Length: 253
Image (cartoon, rainbow, N blue to C red; front, side, top):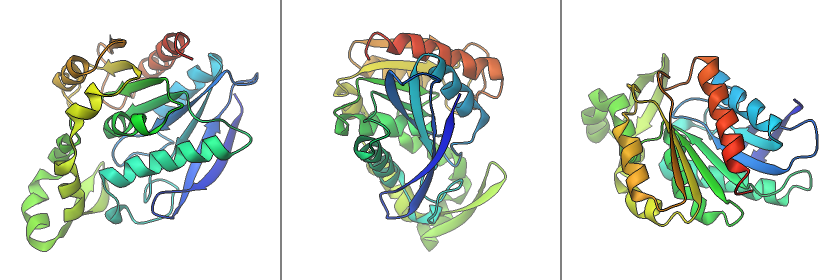
């Protein structure tokens, strides 16, 4: 599978690092992938999914949000809204670059799933949306730093440890999560939707998938990931997502 490193300008004007995974033959469709909270485009599960999509003729752009992975910028200056804006910037890049085309499919893992549900109606080219272990409301992510919420409220920011790395979380990030309304966005999605979620996900509970599914309108599908963990660390789980997604998407692209 050919894979190409690229860069584009994000919503905050920073250089964002990205990779495009391409099929061996000319792409039949293009997808845009949003990674999970404080993760990166290089999470092994993401690569496994995009490789399977390439086998279905789908090219995928995956990128690091501002301040994460290989992208420039300060994570502390970002919030959920800036993540959505980074996604829209990625879409515009794909639309305007002669080597690619605007995305037909939008894919989001965890908080990235909440972001794609918010961003989809601002991308006319998108025909299908996929979420993987996504929260029904991005405010859910606050449980990752709930012990520091009082300090954030009092001092305006706090240093927290997430997945073994230190990040500065500012009050504006917390406030932005609280202001986001997901239910209305899901009901007005207007795109085909497929929801992947594990019933034993200890990070984002299965009840989140239920809420998204109930609020979404048809066409919608739900795929249980059986015994998978939140980050799809077992290769079989992430490859299964890629295979099923590639087959499902054929109907819409």
